[in-house]
Length: 191
Image 1: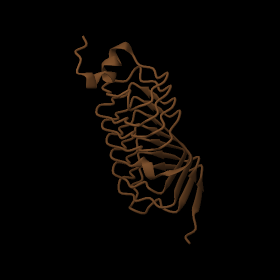
Image 2: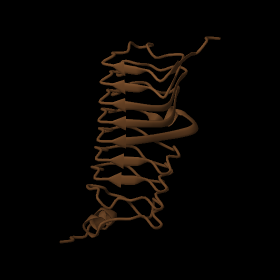
Image 3: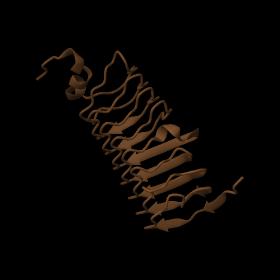
Image 4: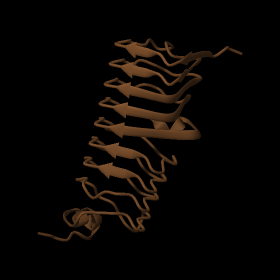
């Protein structure tokens, strides 16, 4: 069995990681600035209380990653499957990120913040989105079927189509102009 390297309170700037460059490492209280993880196939990697600023994760294989209170700011995270991450103490927050085509299928991400994010064609099927904040997000073609979005806040977001018969939305918050995204399947003209 491989030993895991423990890295505490380090700053990483403009590092381009190879396929296994971050493997078998536990990062705690670390900051990553302008780093590229897009070629990574992660194995036994843990991030605890870490911040990623302007990093690239697009296409990375993050199946064996633990995210425990992690902040992504201005990151490109396209086509990433979060569904296979370690679910123990899983906590992530996104600000000004591009998450297009990513997957959160069946995850419990209660209270997660998505602020000013592009979430085009993201898979939130069967995801627990209780209390999630979608603040000024583009949710075009994002799938919510089977999700629990009770108390989720969509008020400032746009382009969503959510079927209330297939998604739990008790006490979810929407702006009046966004209501058409809840009635799309009825083929109504709302003006």
